[in-house]
Length: 82
Image (cartoon, helix red, strand yellow):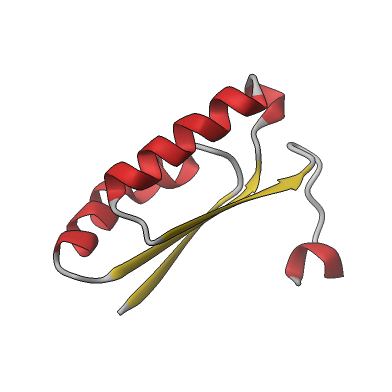
């Protein structure tokens, strides 16, 4: 099974469902992670992105995408949906 975990900020996925994703990856499921922002409102974006990359590797994600939408300024727009 393919599992896509989506978080608004780096660390949302890990804190919200990291344990479940690790378990699923160990059972052979394909894990994909997508962070909508780089978390600039809560810290250094480079550091937070690197932490997210390390946690995705630890979880066993097949792919990680880190987008660059403005943190704390997300609106439901065509750009975000697409």
